[in-house]
Length: 152
Image (cartoon, rainbow, N blue to C red; front, side, top):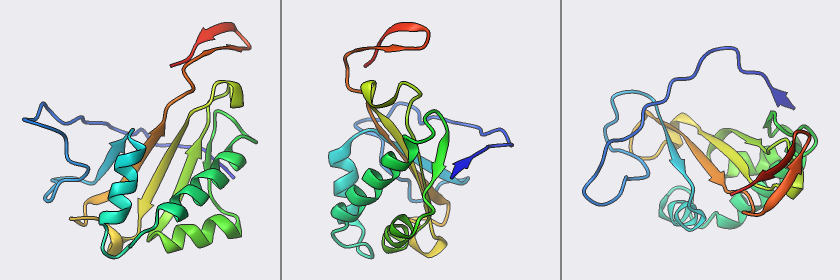
């Protein structure tokens, strides 16, 4: 169902690097959620996790299911609670998976997913607790209740 967030969330972004920002750090000083906007990188990450194996199809099924459910309450964070989502969540070594789609619905497109890792499945460090994956909107004009908008 939809989730309400009561406490404030703080964000800190990585500084400039020589080449690229790693998906996760080996020794973070606080609990960390990595942000990812690259589907190919997400799939590479899934393949690289020795304890996950080749789970790209599981991510695809889970995210598709969560988007369908989140579209019932656009603009709100949806927690995957049904049996199909729960099986995929366990299979991926997660303790929770959330999705949010914009209030503009399917016309605008795009989604945000938050994967929360089970303690024994956290990549590289016990402090790497989650992955935030963003699927961009469709990149075309659309309309919302307030009038036309550019979506990118």
